[in-house]
Length: 139
Image 1: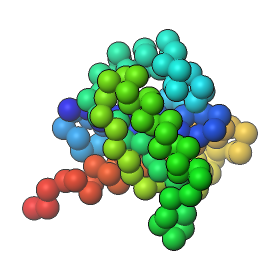
Image 2: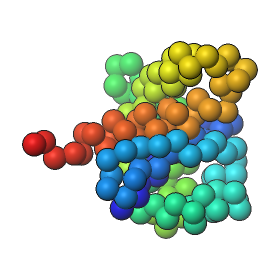
Image 3: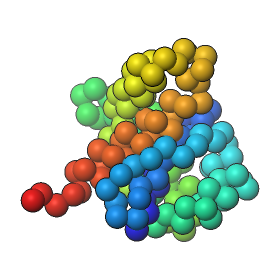
């Protein structure tokens, strides 16, 4: 089954998807958060194209591992998105995923300006990959 990750920010939402075997996460795109929450045509098109069966949404926990006001806002938005898309929604710790995404993009030669709009989808793919790896059976 395909699993879609959402890195929901105030302005932008990064989207990543797993392969059908649930082994590899790949960045897909970044959309305005308002469009994702409203279920606008661009987000519906992404859902139609990838046909996910589950949403994994990044939850911005504090460095102490607790939920703060931002996590509550993200949780509320994620539940609304999941209900509108008729998909179950799970949450994943996304602490430091954006910082790691920026580090990766900098190593590839991106500037702050050129990485804008890419960070969120890379961050979504990073926490989705961690989530997938955490579920993988140990051999």
